Image (tube, rainbow, N blue to C red; front, side, top):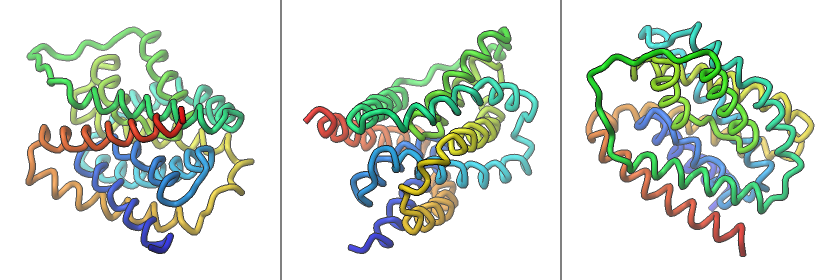
Amino acid sequence: MSALLLALGAGAVTGLALGALGGGGSVLAVPALIYLLGFTPAAATTASLVVVTVTSATALGAHAREGAVRWRAGAVFAAAGIVPAAVGGAVSRQLPAALLTGAFAVLAAVAALRMLRPATTSTAPPVPARASRVAGAGAGLGAVTGVLGVGGGFLAVPSLVNVVGLRMRAAVGTSLLVITINSLTALASRAGSAADVDWSAVGPFAGAAILGAWDGRRLASRLSAGTLQRLFAYALLAVAAFMLADAVC
């Protein structure tokens, strides 16, 4: 199968997950780039940032038109992650490939386990936290984005709900603003490694992800959120196990 078809197929699946779940699909981009398209872990995390930035920015526009983005809260949260994202992007270029693969596998497993955890509901309104907690959560997300090249939507949304105090709908839309800013910052810090990326594969991958996200939104209206999350979580656990075995062997 040609690299173009693989890029289109992998991008479509990534976008489908993003559109259906509102986050987490970007975790599929790095392993797809490594194992299907032959990218090194460092090049894959850089290319993944491009895919994450483009898809998040596109989705951000749609959520903004619906009034679901809290610009001030998102800007404050993202500002705390700018420096960690830049530092993480620079550090990532110096890390061994096996370490990057292993760390990504652990992150994917954590994301899957969070999705499998039963959701808890509360009738009490979210309570805004202190600035120090907001800054800490934003900085942590920025560091993860910079080092591993993922948007971190599965981390951003609960942080914006539990730490910043946003409602779920606003948290999903605002997380796209945070992810876009962090991804752009991490990309800027990796400018020197851009030559290692096969852009002829990244372009079709990103384009297919954008189109796949629209299909994902339609899929979400037909299946329950719980069913979608469980299916995606089991697939993600399988990917994590494969990557971890590859890192240690």
